[in-house]
Amino acid sequence: MALPPPLATFLLILLFFIGEIRCVAVSKEVGILADTDTLEYVHTVWRHGDRTPAEYLFPEDSRKWPEGIGELTEEGAAQQYRLGQWLRKRYGSWLGEKFNRNTIYIRSSDYNRTLMSAQANMAGLFPPKHAISEGLMWQPIPVHTRPKPMDKELYEEVSCPTAEIEMNKQWKSEKADGIRRKFAAELKFFSEKLNLPDMELKATWKIYDNLFCESEHNISWPSWMNSSIFSRVNDLYNEVSQLEFHTDTLRRLRGGTLLEEIFHRFSDKSNGKLGNEAKFYAYSAVSENASKARQTFYFQHDSTIAALLATLGIFYEIYPKYATCLLIEMHKMPNETRVIRVFHKNDTDIDRLIEYSIPGCDAPCTLESLGKDLSKYFPDDWEKECGLVQGGELVYLVALVLFFSTTCSCAMLFMEKCKKRILRFSSARSGHDAESLLEHYHEHDHDHDHDHDHDHDHGHDIDYD
Image (tube, rainbow, N blue to C red; front, side, top):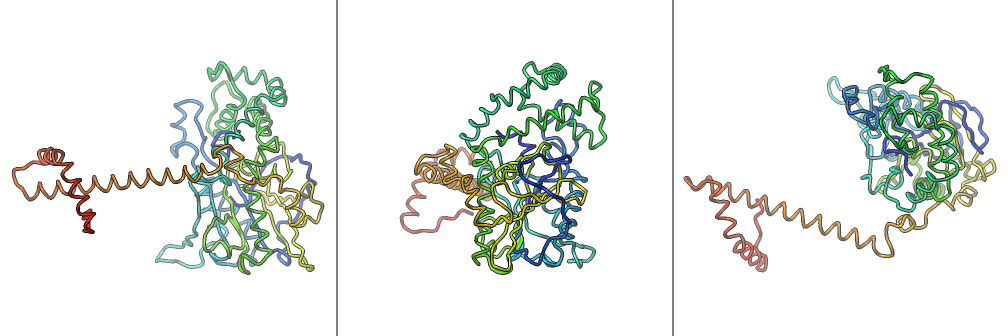
């Protein structure tokens, strides 16, 4: 599916809902301090902080939000800073007092709000101890990302035709029809107020998103809106959200890639491939230093986290809120067995922490058992399963993109050379204006190309300056 871009996408600890969570997993409240005696590695996934609406209900709404659409607010940055401080309380000296590139790796989805959230979080987790320049107390920490079209782990709207077809089936399912019947009055009401003759379930997120953002920032609602109606909008939004990862196909193609990376990184750590320093991953992409990472942080959106939880078999009634997080820890027991534990900080600024059992993996859930139970959600060939390529087409497409990129770059360099030649001519020949020189150049364009080829054939250097 993908709920709208704003509500979706990846991240360090995450998951956040302000109500009770209904899941097939057993949950219990635990203390916030980690069991660092056995803790070996942590993956954290979190959602960005408070933001402006992802889309406006009315064009004039742009005046309410000078930051622009879908941008992190000052409060959102502060929420992430406080979450970083909370992580410092939980993991303390186990992480070290100073940032260590061999211990920690941070990866974010490619959105301003998630990149800025990652930076704010790290500022809280690793506060500077001294000024790096006079008057500048700052500890710069690298945050890595990938272009959206390539980010199948953290960007839930990356193209996947198979998943999109499956999600369209969900919109036509009996469960979706039940939601339409239950909220028929609300759908009709908003259809009239927003002048949308056919209000679709997939569009209701925008209503909730705008009203919620306005409420959080004390901005007046339209005269036809009140808290009672908003309560129903909130219920509608949460029920529609549950359609997103309702099938195994959606979990495999939207949440399976991230879960698989997490599992393989745990395996590499237990097999000694990551080194002793690796502890905290926030998200290890392919790089030289990733092999030494100790903890991984994923900075994501609400639906990315929802996909990950759903793939683990954990479901909820309330959609994730801002600046909350999921913690997936690997503990090394005295007998060398690796045990996986899942924690969820499900309130934005409250210390309450929940631990879940993983459905299908009896406690203590070992890494080996987890792999057996969840491997069905690990795509064998994600691009092929999504219907993006057949056989060797992917290699062909990549080669095609590289060819056109190279061609465009060469063309730009050539045009730049032409401009510089014209400028040199114009400054050297008084009375010869640039316009006539351009005309002169175009008349002799083919001759120039011949000379260029001749130089190349004889190994002469071509001056692109």
